[in-house]
Image 1 (spheres, one colour):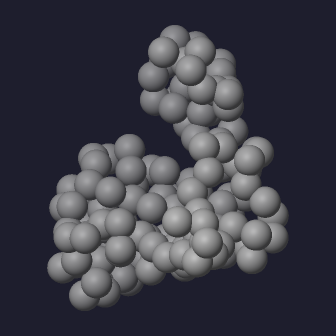
Image 2 (spheres, one colour; image 1 turned 135 degrees about the vertical axis):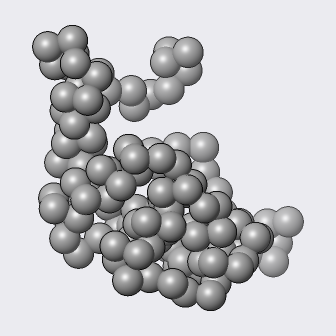
Length: 130
């Protein structure tokens, strides 16, 4: 149920056409936000379209295809020239994404971005926090 989320954004139903409506939604998502990375897990053709659109709108974004999940992520990896052993063989996805997204292991998790301090040092676990 969308009412449980604070950041739902509705886009137009473009002429009743699903494909055009998805392009509208993806374009808005990638134009209204700046991403450091795009993570691609499994999937079908829509994943490839998202990767191409994201790269066209944000050419410096890091692309992370989780190759071990198969599906369209394999094509994303091929398109980007990525065949890293870690992305192909590592099934510990929490560790994999911490490493690929450069998230420090001692960084606290927050329920929403609004609760998260901008200063990374304020987000780190201290010995007395446990």
